[in-house]
Image (cartoon, helix red, strand yellow):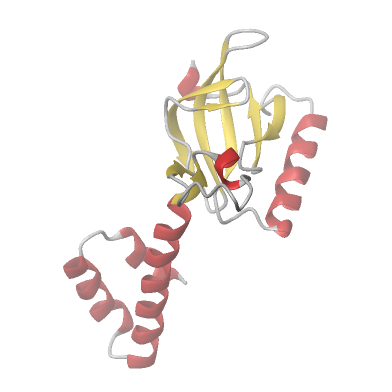
Length: 174
């Protein structure tokens, strides 16, 4: 996995090939396995970046005697970006990323205005096991009371159903 993760970080095919030459050191089955994973990862990224949603859902519900033609579609991005909203929060900038989640500096707009850190589970990582671990993390943080531990302010889910949590302790927000 270390070789795959390191190769994934390299953007140019030439850099990846040179890295794999060095990292796999002539181990052809290992190299083939890593290349297969890299290809699958690229295909998965393309798949998870967008979802097609109907622009006119009422047209799809018309009776067959009134054909409306093919439904028009719009593409909805499934990854959060600065400027977008999650619940009462406007995302300002990404400040961190881990294996399962992304952390943003965000501005809470209601019921009070303040800057917070907001962590959301990455698309594709929202499996039952990861969500359960995330919910346990939220609960554990919410119960802790120490000046060096972030205070959970809020928790919820995005429009696509992925859980998030916000907290007040964010060095980048100060």
